[in-house]
Image 1 (cartoon, helix red, strand yellow):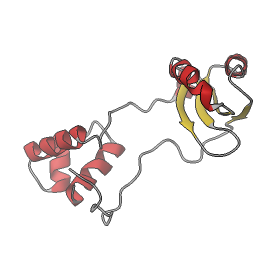
Image 2 (spheres, one colour; image 1 turned 180 degrees about the vertical axis):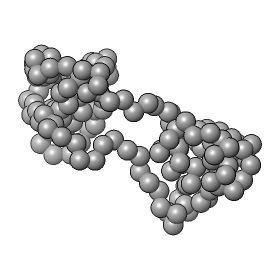
Image 3 (cartoon, one colour; image 1 turned 90 degrees about the horizontal axis):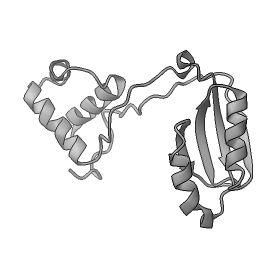
Length: 154
């Protein structure tokens, strides 16, 4: 990886639909070279996938919340497939602290959220925080031009 790869990654995080020509113009290399670099970044696992960033509020999912769950290690085998099957769960992370799982979810209503919380309470104690507003929306990590590339293996 080099600084050109960092430019490509930053540009793709800002707009995954950017054209190869536009990327080539930004990086001062040819479109085929950009295409080859993107293919290499995908093969190496640095680029996992591409997603549209949806406005859930416009789709009538007005309730965004974070749910923390105390999950015993013995329940992970049952819980992970369950939570992965729920489309309203945008993200679920295993974390340190009193609660071992934290989920970011969206629902149409507080009633739908409450029904989901009731279901996951079968796995353990929960704590739910409903989001009032978002000061920093979902975004990628802007990689600085001086990012240490010495540990990255191609």
